[in-house]
Length: 279
Image 1 (cartoon, helix red, strand yellow):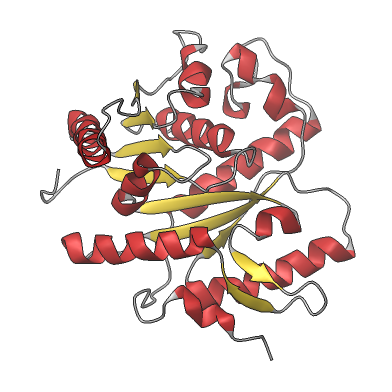
Image 2: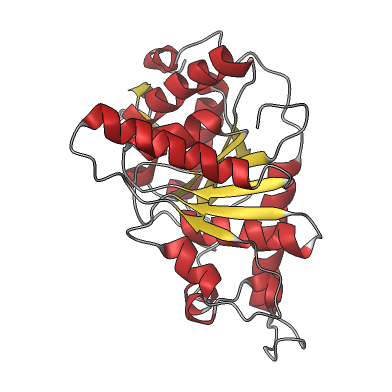
């Protein structure tokens, strides 16, 4: 696993449910498969099983990454359970050691499996809904001035896993935040969130990536096991202009994930650096 060549691990994670992690993970995994890449998928939220069920519902004629669901350990001693989960995750990653990419979907809560996946990520993608509720996942915001007053528990967790990764193999984690379910009408709230995210990206070291607009089609495709990249004459589904625009959003996200990150020193500043108000 730690040889000269190994799969690139793309982890979708945050500690809030309903952000669209599984939908984004499936679209990226299928997009890579359609591009001829050898890609596998790991579902670390086996109880919910959104990613597993999504990919299991695909027609066999469609490009579909092999998928493994990892169950939480039932061992009564926490240390033993943590170790069992670590072995399961490393075994699953090792199983696809000859692949180019592995896409991991994590639970929408803090757990040992969530932290293990974050520490092993080459690319961490954090979808957030376009609201102050989800922005609170990344940082504490002053309600009157909109100044950044401190890091969130999730940002601190990512920071800890970045340190673990650096100590483990000297590598860093390319952290990407994508705004999800964005409204199509420009408004003051939307602009304020964009400004805060731009400032926060510089302070705690993540990249902003194009996200997905609020479109019903993303929810409708789940039961059929289809993604926007599957639509067309070969699957018998007609394309609307909205579908074309949504498919471009998916491709833009994949391009952002595959793009080399700009040079930065992510271990110079801790997330507590965001505690200083913006000038």
